[in-house]
Length: 632
Image (tube, rainbow, N blue to C red; front, side):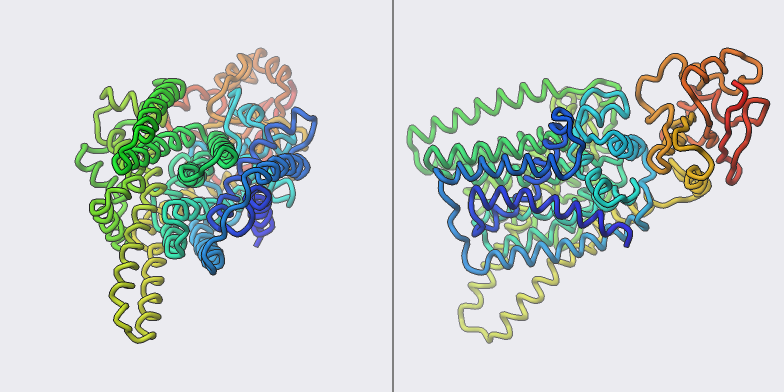
């Protein structure tokens, strides 16, 4: 219950600004376009959070509303010249809305159960920086990408997830863990399925079957979004990837536009959503480029073959040359250093291809319904090559995943193509569902068309109703299929407080909850961030000397991390304590969140004993202790 207010705030933020833009620019009669609203809203929120501090504004509804009004004004101007969208077939909008509502309810329940409790946190390495970034943003009133990176001394960090989450906490007063879980529920239940449905509507001319099937399939894969709540955790990637289908949908619909006003409007929409994916995460933007290249080139190739005109051939040549230049330049710019891209492959190439084609990476068992629909989708493309643009993005995703997880670590192709994703097979595995859903949706549509042909001989009405009911139940059963069930089980394990949790044990969490009563609001607390002590910022609203494992601690802090235990004998320690203003020390032993070897850098601030200058204030269990520094 405590997460509901923040959840509803983020849901409203994901719906209202984008819907206002779509209605202003295209009208309200096109459900495919309206389904772009959550991705547009996320884009506007991230951009508004970036602009707000430049105007001297605190991050809240005011800058969000102001930028929304600006974008709505531009959309109205474009509509005056380009006109509204044509209306969808009658009843299509209600079907799409109903499918989204059912999917949102199912997804919310599944992930809420996986999180376990509203104030649980993911016991994973990257969560330290994300939780503290939200707390820091709340303290400073800024979710700018230049502010968010300050938590780990990075000049710029994509801020879409942080902007949404901070707004949920700011407007409801929810604690950081509760706000994080609520925002994540809103993202997976609204932003993600709406984006997949928008892409299905673009590919399949707004067929009602496509909306229902794509909505249901968004619940059926473990590789996304569930994987990102266990691996990392990768919350910024979560938002960026959830927006990829929406950005790709804008590309697909733009290919059928005619006339300068409509082309300009479509180009601006594509640019806006591409920018939004970048503010989600840069490698989500790169994914859009790869998938868009596959769709555009195969579409133009199909037209060139069927039309056999000079104009069609010229369009194809321009598309191939243009994307070759853009992708080459972007991959070169987005390259990551060896310290961040050393992830090793999992298996051999044949195994990785099998996992990719069945969308069952990491040993997730395939869900039969999904696997069968994919096979039928493959067969449909083989029979009608004009459907190739639906399949090629999936082929690109499978190839990238296979290269990353199936080639040797120093293979040149791996270093060239998958380095911008840190050569991380998990991040590339998560791309598979984004572009597998249209292929599986094509398989479902082929089955529906076959059933309609079979029913033309005036079968009884009850047979038709029974067929629809059985098909609907079967497609929504993927939400409890083995593929996603295994992944959600791993999420549940990642979010549990235990005696040996990677970041915070049950004892450590209990001690942090008492900091409000045991330390003054302006206290500065030292401790090893590798043991979770830095989460005193996110969970207890207390300043910490080091907010994340990575960063650039001052020479004085580095000295204290190595020598604080010598405070009774080394006067230099007291001098540096005074210089930094450290008041308390949290000692959570030597349980390391990622690599026990890293604990050496904090030898002087772990396993402390009380003394003349270190006064034990509180303890919980054998390893969680709070010391007050006195006499310096």
